[in-house]
Picture 1 (cartoon, rainbow, N blue to C red):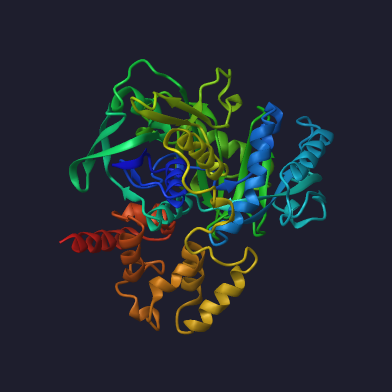
Picture 2: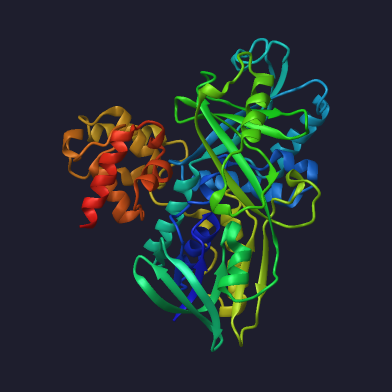
Length: 494
């Protein structure tokens, strides 16, 4: 019998499994699709305190999130790194004094040590002003961090597995029923139909958390989640510098324009209530128009539909606190413990975000300890994720070292592998001397050696898993490349 079984392979489920396994609990996790295939790969891809949450007085959440930025950066400096955000003052919207005061709080609430502080910019002189309309003069520049969101999930799951957790992808939990003070859980997936037993159940189903309660767990009439859709567009590169823009819109909402994958700009997000099936979420024409119009309000050259190269959309499973507008609903996480020790305890997880996932996991483990008893101590604050075992400011040095060890490998390939896998890039490259030794080529510097690693070590099963979640090479490969990759993956199964 397992100690803990986790339903859901998004960032919350993966973080909980990792923390629990590292403390010595026996853990299983099931994800009905691919890891990070839902909300966790549809984020704005930031590790941030949530500057706008200050307006809604969510001081606890902002403080916790700010403190997490440097902890997570230290844990995974290959997939997380600092970004500077340029917030132009827009006359007629929030006053400059309010922006300055909010950023002063932002700088001092979270124990910032390594990230640089806020400074004031003159957009008529600073390069950040060049892509913008000439009417914008004053701006504030502050710090947050970037994260490769889907890889963040996969690396948490990889570390959980390295510490003994059993990770099941494409495995649906058909039912979970209380039995003898624990849970009997029926699974249907890659391994066929099977049953497992666990002492405690964690429901981290994200947008499906209510569906798990009402269907899988056999309860009825429960409703805790407010689904809020957030959509993004990716366009051809709008500016040459490496800073991001934090823009205010006339409706009171905010959005970002972020350098993305070297050659593109990511614009988002939207906030609108969603009432459909989460698996069917997709950007709407209205949201596309909204983002294009909002961006064109700031950039000197209008952003048009023909510049869009990709869109994505996700559903945030926010705890339903009765807020009147989607953008006002709390982004804080809520944990609900259900049942008694004698009959079987479940912990249901609502809300949460990438930035606070580690702390959410610690909070869940506090509840688990109250039921199962304490094993190991909290440990994740000073740990690294797979491949992240180097200093936060040492990426370039590690990349140079990798280049010295593999002098005949293309520099672009080495940099991409280092960004995705950190020190585990060497596991992929092995004793191979050049790219000709890496096996079949699928375009965009993707070779069979990397594909084999992703299948064996990171639960990748399909071309979409590899091209859009483990990497973002879907932006660069053509239809023939995808067909070759699909054929190769099919051949591996035979």
